[in-house]
Length: 86
Picture 1: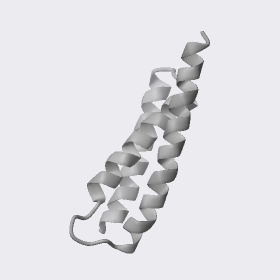
Picture 2 (picture 1 turned 60 degrees about the vertical axis):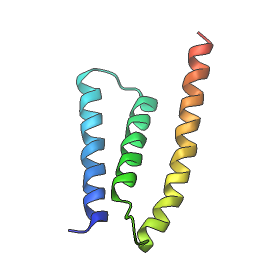
Picture 3 (picture 1 turned 90 degrees about the vertical axis):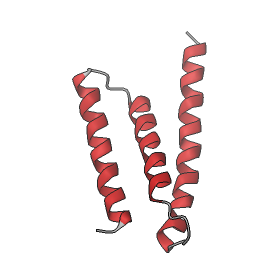
């Protein structure tokens, strides 16, 4: 199994674990789910990043990481605005 295959399976297991835990805790909040999934994604990207080589999938995953960073920032900003407005 290649690193990118293991990363895909790990991300799927992480997402299922987070959704299962949220359903057990009766906390169906999409923002919380997306935040937890994005944190898991960033950890996986950091873990599979090779030190001495740069395969093609790593170059493409950096673009995805930039998009996820922007999404993560938007979610955090929305959460802060929600807390301030209370």
